[in-house]
Length: 89
Image (cartoon, rainbow, N blue to C red; front, side, top):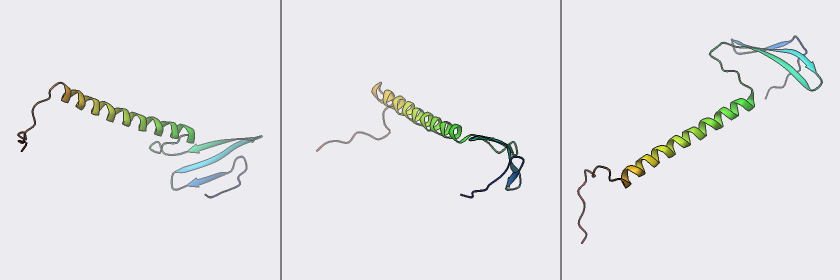
């Protein structure tokens, strides 16, 4: 991690299109302005983590729904398999 000291009004540049400006410092709070291209998402870390967790939950729920649907199909007598039953000996 790169650690920098900046004063209000000073900035730093990330890559070609992202500029981070320190707007003000009041006590333990720092106001930061971020200029970035529209296609670059800029989110607070806690929001990005919450979105990621929600996406994971939704993916699991979708998988569960799909599995439940398949199980229900088997229980209701889904179409027979293309493989003929094997005889026991």
